[in-house]
Image 1 (cartoon, rainbow, N blue to C red):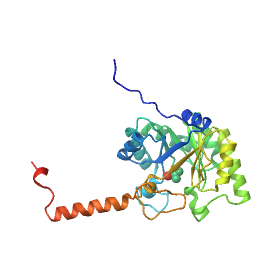
Image 2: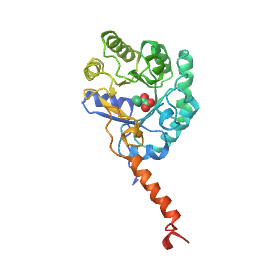
Image 3: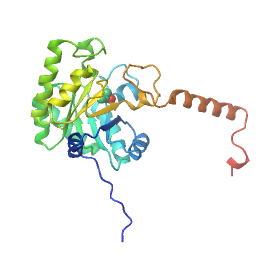
Image 4: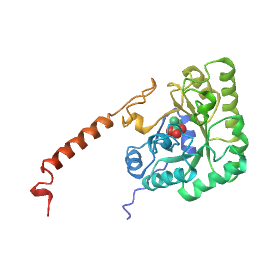
Length: 271
Ligand code: KIV
């Protein structure tokens, strides 16, 4: 008899079933092997290799500079760590906006080189053709509406989006288009809770919110923010579960002091 225990993997279909039975979906960003291994062991449903890696891993001010090669490198290390979670990878700025063929080629690279499970892209009507083209290759696509950080220079601010009539109406229209095009889920970022709730009721696919209130089908946070590795980003929607910046800093200060005082290594810590 085998002792191998089958791990039930999360798929895009699992997420739709979760929405149907009212079970909330948990999602976090991950960019490397070691963190992804911990998150997967904690039974996170979805790991997003977000282009927020541009900020938190590469130190850029926006998500625009990160390249497709860099995203593939992060994604392939995350994929090696997981045994249960669904891994979605952001198409970075400049890798899909040109035309639908470019979007397909970039998505195929992500699926082939990183062995990811799905891709995510930002936008509504503007990217619908690309969504359809990516799907022709059997690659699942997650949408992203509301605050779309790749368009920061168009918005000029990271403030709440779709507060007004026309922008809210466009968001509803885009969500419906993405569902009809075949997206398996949509992220809604930083929009009023009432609008997010309306979208979640309107479409059958799961709606994952970040700063979009509780009446959606799941929540996503940037892991560096919720773990407190980042101290200088404190939007109202963020809940910090740890204060790792201070904890790591204190540990390193103790290590430096121990090295300087020759307290480390002691008799037991040598050969
Ligand atoms: O890149 C990212 O981390 C994201 C989340 C904010 C949803 O897209």
